[in-house]
Each structure stands twice: as structure tokens, then as C-alpha cells.
Amino acid sequence: MDYWAKPPFDRTRVSFSLDQSIPQNHPVRHLDEILRALDWSTWTQTYNGKLGQPPIPPWVLAAVILYGLMRRIRSSRQLEYACLHNLDFIWLAEGRTIDHTTICIFRTKFQEPLKQLFKQVNQIALAMGLIELVQVAFDGTRVKADASRLHTWTAERVEKALQELEAEIERLLKGAVDADAALWGVGEPQELPPEVADAQKRQEKLGALLEKLQQAEAARKKDGIDPKKNPAQMPKADTDSKVMPNKEGGYAPNYTPVAATDGTGGFLVDCEVLAGPNEQNELVPSMKRIEEDYGQCPENCSADKAFGTGPNLEGMEAQGINFFTPVESSTPQEGNPAQRADPRQPVPEGEWSKLPRNPRKKLDKSCFVYEVVTDQYFCPMGQEMPYRETKKSEGKEVRIYACSACAGCPLAQECLDPKAKRGRTVSRDGYEPARERMEAKMATAEGKKTYNQQMHIAETPFAVMLPLVENVPHPRPLAPALLRKGGLPQPAAVYRRRSVWRVCRLMTF
Image (cartoon, rainbow, N blue to C red; front, side, top):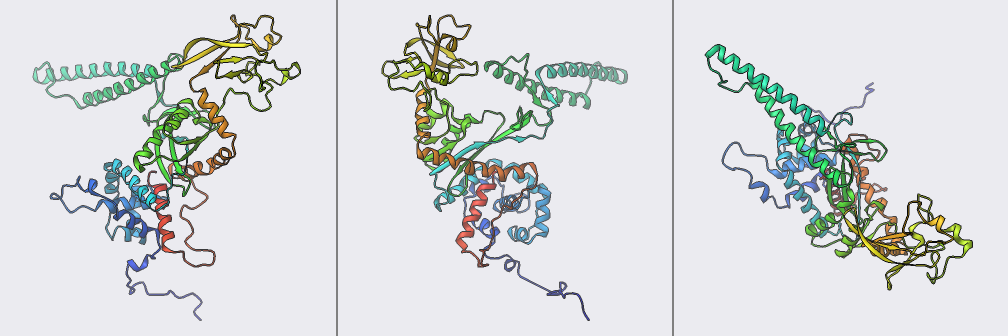
């Protein structure tokens, strides 16, 4: 009795077609179809065409790299193995044996054209209706650099290392001169000793590093940070990264990737990696890049509270984008006794305890009502606070409004800071009208509905990206299911749409 299941064929005799082994609706076919339809002229112009052996076409190498990302493979050595053993990769490479060195050189050489490739694929998606730019969500995250928090350079450490290196170079040169004089009677070395050349290269690198640190310290000083008490730090292992706060607490060398995601199909329509924590400054430039790449701005855009800065509010309005983000405006809100029909009338004494306080336990700025027509504030007691002067704060002009009736005011103890000598003042910068408009917009049903979708749209790409970047297991496979519940295959157009989706989502990472 033959107990074991018999093999379906004899592997020593079977022959088959490679093309027939790949299903018609397989994602690798759709990726190959998409890439071959693109314009590769900027790539092919870099090839000589006359010297050496015939090269592998750039669309094949790009396809292998992008398909590797779709299959969670980033290593050039693993891609080399896949091109030799995986049927889908063998089909994609058309049987070519591509070594890891070729893949690595190609990926480095065509770094910029790969970004342009991302734009071309997204333009195809826009033409197919997969990208609509009706609602775009913008967000950023932190990615740890391949460096230690404890091993960093500061300007002081670099200067000390340079001094030690200069002394070492002088010692090495003197030794070389003495050796030449002893052998040949010549007082200068005929050739620069290798150890001196290496030391000089290290000196050049340290000098460039010192220049970067000095620029970083100048920027910190401009921001009001004392470089002597809190010097700029640069990781030794990954000098492009920057030591910045972790979102989970503490400090570490990190990068800050930011992405704009289209809400229709989850496409990344723009992305960038920053070497600093100021991701909020990238919102308006990202919208401008989207307009350049697609020929139109998003109709609506949402972002979390960190992006609700004055420049962003005005910048988005200038571009004609309907922007949604939580902001903190000084306008009295519902439930605040300062919100009254006639601000010239005082807040009833029974409501004083409900007036909001600031962190210093004094009456908050939201207790004061601004009147646009007369350009003045009114305090909770209904007293006028006209414009007094203009000051500069953090590089921007701020208008100061002051009250002259603080003496004898029953709320003075709750309102005035102990150090105040000229009465209570309230500041107002040029962005306050934009904050007030945004606050009113976020209170509408449209504002609440649009912002409620922000987290799902904006956070999903990072949930996909971070496991790829940090090499940790991901709980959900990236490729969607290929069959319906009933087991019937879906139309080819559905697979093609999903393949474009995966390319756009993953190719930049």
C-alpha cells in the first residue's frame, strides 16, 4: 500500500512556460504594464550605448526595486536572490540574473529620476480617477536614525579633536622628514606618507562637521537658545540626522518624514524627509509641490493641531485651499462669561469665578473681547483697552492693547501680574483674524466631519511605512486579497487600480 501522496509531476521531466505560470491578474503584470508605458528618455540618455556590454533596461531594474518594496524586500542581496529563485521576480526580470551590486548602483545613480517616476505614476493615477485631490490629509512622524544618542559631536568636541589631529599631523610630518633626511639627506619628504594623508582627510571631515555645527548653533541662538548652555549636537554615525525629541519621550537622533495623502484611494501625493522637528513648516511648500506636479491644488486639506500656525493659515488661504485644523484663538467661546452681547457692560460678579485662567492663574486672554471697528479690546469689567504700541516678538510684529483703569478694579488681583506696572495688556498679532476664521470654520458641521477623517487618511501611510523602515513585523499584509468572498476573481481593472495604488503608496519608501 502506497501511503504517501504522489507528486503531480516528475520534476526531472516537466517543462512549462514561465509566462503561463504568472496569473493574468497578478500584481507583477500590472506593475510591468504601468512602468513600460512611462517616459524613460531621461534615464536612457545617461547610458553610453557604445561601450561595454549591453546594459539591463532601466525599466526592468526599477521594476525589480519597486516590486521588492511591494513584497517588503529592500535589501539588494535579497532582491538578487529573488531574481534567481522567485517566479514572479524571474518573470519581471525576463530571466536576467541581476547581482546586488548592479541593483545598489542603479538605486544610487537614479535617486532623483526615481522621484520623477513617482510623479509619473501618480499622474497616471490622477487620469484614472484614483486621485481626485478633493481631500488631502497632511501629517508627519519620527523615524529613528541609525545612530546612538550617547555618541554625538558638539562644536567644542570637534574643535578639541581638530587640535589633537593637528598635533598628530605635525608629529607624523616631522617623523617623515627625519626619516628622509636619514636615508637620502633630504630635509622634506618626497611623498606624503599614507598615515599623514589619512589624518588630513579626517581633518577635512572634522572641519566640515565643525562648520555645520557652527551654523546649527547660530540658528539656535537666533531662536533664543543659548548654545553654551544647550549646544547643538550632531550624531557621529549618521550626521544627516538630528537629535530631537521622541514622540514617546526623551531625545534621540531622528528624521521627520512628512506626507500628504489623498483621501480617495490613500495615495501619497507628496512626501519629504526632514532633518529637523519643524514639520509644520513643510505644509505650504508641500501644497505648492502638489500644484506643480498635478496642475491643481487640493480642494480641501486637513492637518492636526501642530500645523495650525499663523503662516500656515494665511498660506493656505493664499493658495485657495479650504484648510481644516484645530487652532487656539483668544475669542471667547461658548460657556465663557466674557462672551456677551455688549462688551462695554461688565461681566456679572456671580460669573467671575467662571472666567478662564491662564497657567499663571490670572485671567486668560480669552476673557477680553476685541472689537474690529474701533480696534480695541474690552476687559471683563467693560473698560476700553485701546492700542498702545507695536513690539516685535519671535520675528513678527505684535500690537499691544492696554487698560488704563486697573487702579481700584475689583478684578485687579485676579487679572494683573505682580510685575505689571502699567496695567493689564493684551497682545494681538497679524494672524489672529485667520485664527478666528479657522475657529469658526471648525465649529461647523463640515469642519467637524472633514477633520474626523484626518486621522484615518493621514496616519495609514505611516502605519505601512514604519515597519518597512524599521524592519519590524507588520500585523497586516500589504497586498489586498485577490479573491472575493465567493471565490470569484475580480475584474482586471480592479487589480490594475490596486496595483497603481500599491506603487504610489510604497515606491518612495
